[in-house]
Image (cartoon, rainbow, N blue to C red; front, side, top):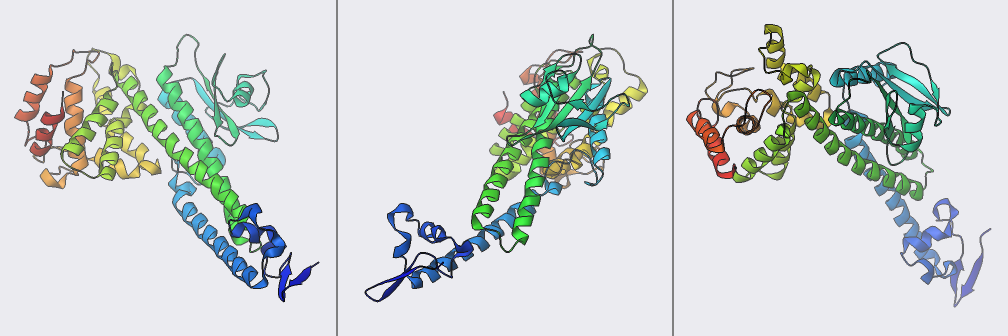
Length: 418
């Protein structure tokens, strides 16, 4: 009930008809005065202004939420494979198949939490059932502890900072150990998917609040804070994913050092020497990390033997960049690096692949990555040869500038290499 008093003819109140949700505290905090002012000291005229400000604040929050949603909806976050979001089983089966292929393991299963149990969502094998969330199974233990469990199988938790969603289970012959770099890749995929799925659920909740004309500004602020935190986490996890993917590629390629990271770092130095802007430099850096991404889908034995490869194996290696580009095109947050990787095998004289582009028609990022990659490959140990001295590598690069590589890029490389 409305309470009124008058002091010197001025009407005072505790609840005004202009209040949002009939809450006088909204008026107080809208003034940013907190406990320094009592609710019965706000005049009716001031209440009108405050109510208007609160309504404007709600409209501002809705606009901010709409902008966040448009940028970070599911279609713009993680999509390792092309899929229809309504076909959940196909999605997770495809992910399981990709993990099995990348790690060259016996089987992969993906469980999602439902009604207190872990329900099978995707698998590369039929001999699997749901399991309880407890310490009696590797999957249950990984879900509860949020840590990877190494027992009869490898169980990797799918979780983010807000909640746990499921587990990725890897079956493999115990006599064949799975490389640590591959496990880290699966862990980053698990966390990235969990964060992306949680973000999508939060976006759905935000859309409901936006559509509800009676939603309170406080609820909108809360959902905005959750979205902002998830988006920040997603950006961090994307970077970790790229780094782990690059490490796994190097492992498959048989490099004794981080070839992808060295290439990316050298490409970044070349960019700075050439005065490129920060965004372009970052994209080229990511492209440098992932320029050999196609190798992740090929058997490791192809790269670890010093013997002669078969014609079929050689063809697969030569075409690995096409596989990599296909993978990248389906990881949407990396889509901008695709052109740089697509054309990295072009030659400056126009005799390269896949389009036979020449000179300036080759994307600048591709020209930078090609030179950085060649230099790092020549100066790194491989299973079948020792590293080349820096002086000799630079001599080769300069001798083939204008044919294989952009002379301007080679000149910049010479200044920053070593």
